[in-house]
Length: 288
Image (tube, rainbow, N blue to C red; front, top):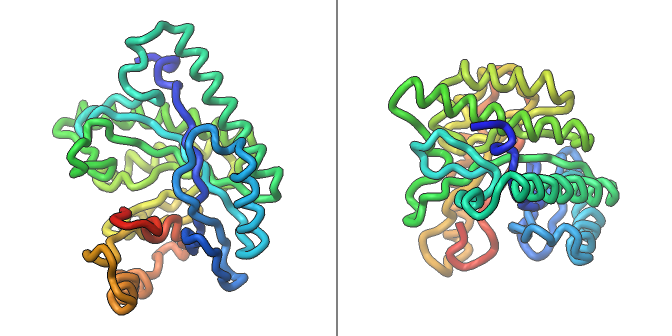
């Protein structure tokens, strides 16, 4: 795959949390020692320019003293066993040629640039997070955490593809002066190959001078403790609070504290700060 084909994509904008969560309708206050952000659910592609977006962030900044907004950019992978990564939904290339690709890339870049500028204009910082979406996942059983391969050739190809993907956005993060950049998010099975990840992080370091984080899931965050070339150890605190559709307060409290003992007692061996990058589900029935 050529670089031109790889660098195509749509921007998905969301506000996300650092060290705390504020994903409900009403913001809630946290100690000033926290670096805070917010989860406002997924915004459609063009919502960053909507006046309501800025109004919401202004309110959260005023009432909850948030400092960061996360902007997600999406890469697409056909299946957990497919090493190819593209930034435009699969099938797009069948509907147009290189000219249409180039146009889509320019639109994608403009949306990212405008999004970062809008957030900075509100006096907030940006965390840019490239994520992978597994397309062939209709049953919902597999996701990016299950990406893995049976041969060394496939593993090598995937890491080469991922390097191109992440370095492209690392360049954008540098260009638009993004304060923090995520080198990976929830790629659990791939984390076992620490040497490959350390090489990718070193490549990102050469292109981007800001702060770096990798966000792992609850089951695998201790695996990245030895990655000394990242600034923050990220943990995505996404888990089921209760099995019932309408749990009572007791069940909610019990669910919220499910992982408190293991996470609360864990201390990174390297002494680096920990970021709870995402906490909890949306405030909706059957939310994940």
